[in-house]
Length: 138
Length: 138
DNA sequence: CACCGTTGTAACCATTGTAGTTATTACTAT
DNA sequence: ATAGTAATAACTACAATGGTTACAACGGTG
Image (cartoon, rainbow over all chains, first blue to last red; front, side):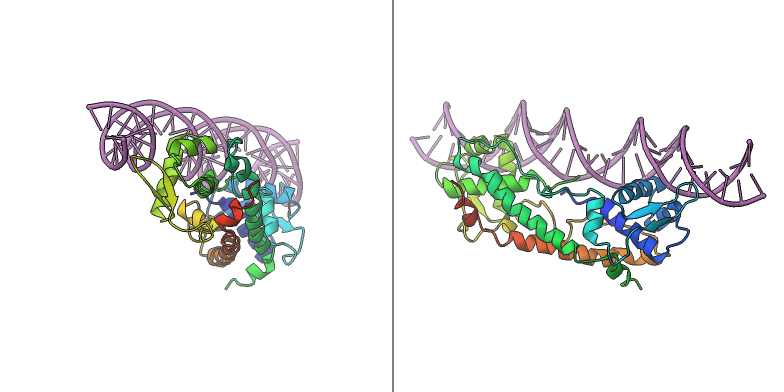
């Protein structure tokens, strides 16, 4: 069973850390909290940077948010780390036999339904902000 | 980017075939419509059988539904082929550092949100029946 | 300027899930 | 018995993941 990569949950972890500890956050410190290799963190940070969510100070170290925690939703993070592309959560088999009534129609009909399901999930992700998340930490 | 296996879309294809052509549907014919190897079809049929959705006549060949097409939803199929397990669409990294406020809380707080997102998707799948799908074929 | 801690990347690897394939066995009607 | 079918195990190639090592680039500080 394929699952959505931990890249997403790690990215949320990273952004939460920046929210809670805005100063002097080195990649190594983040790696210590996430409990993984610093290179993995840097890879994800690169994606968050490219998406315009964070800014990193090379050389000296440290990172900060480019939006407020209430402006960043889980959907923004999910999109930033390319964990699932537009309309691609479900993979649909291709090259069905077009000489069969089912084979001819299944792809487009099913894709439409699956797109709706994916959208429902993403819509739910968009309802949660980084601020809401971090405010639940004890 | 990981996507949900084509096992799901193939299973929907198979059930649609049984709906549209209820008689004399051999695995080889199905494989011809799906355009894949018959063993792939049999593997999926095995899962559909185990889930109580279909019944297969060994030896002689042929398959039939154990529920009506309006009773079978996309969620039933999705569950039958084990494409995603309960609360497991999103993988969340484990072993975060519990000595960090974020590391200590992230897993449970995030899991709760992701579960909601997954549920929203599955709820949408449950709204579409096999009958609705096949009635759209031209 | 030289040093040191940091970030940025490339390259490599083991692991895992997928989907196709071949081969063999078991079943059932004729 | 035979023919056609389903069931299943074993193997393969492929792709994404997540960790690792290595090294280059950056930027304050002494």
